[in-house]
Image (cartoon, rainbow, N blue to C red):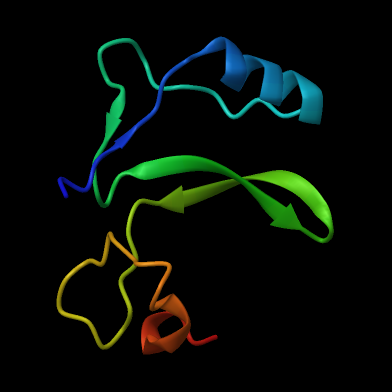
Length: 84
């Protein structure tokens, strides 16, 4: 896998933002690929409500030497990275 996330300003994104009352924004034209270590505007749960959360693409556990960008649903419950 290449490890890139494609973000587009689609009508679906606009409708979602309008429906939940959040402006998550979209990348400037010509910069739709988000690469590992770059900021990603994310929608997540905060105190029981949907909120905009500024996150980073990838996970860097203290014990890991490299940034982790992929997880398999079949084994995520068994991996120490995601244990908590």
